[in-house]
Image 1: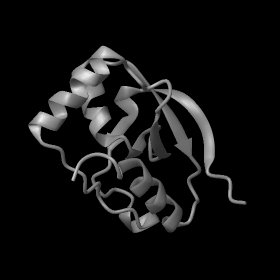
Image 2: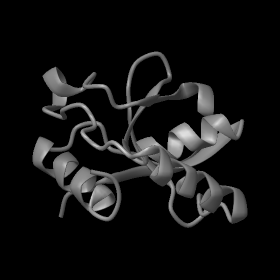
Image 3: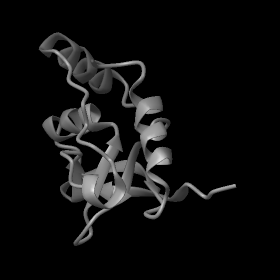
Length: 116
């Protein structure tokens, strides 16, 4: 069985980058295709303000360069965490050398319930 999770960390928000396709060449991971409307964003913002679920639903990230991480699962939540001025965000740090199909499955699973 392939090891997927490298670690769980409280990552400084300044080290987290939204997925804009930076890993396409190296990992076959395309830009995050999910977009949410203002209404959906406001709903997510209120939900996180009311009860932050980051402890039970961390972001899913992959190491990038210079101590940065690309968010594979949770790009919209990251936008909200930035707006709310979070200092750190609990994150599942995935192994760097997984097959691209595993990363794509993680992304699809994480985003199957929200956004379009």
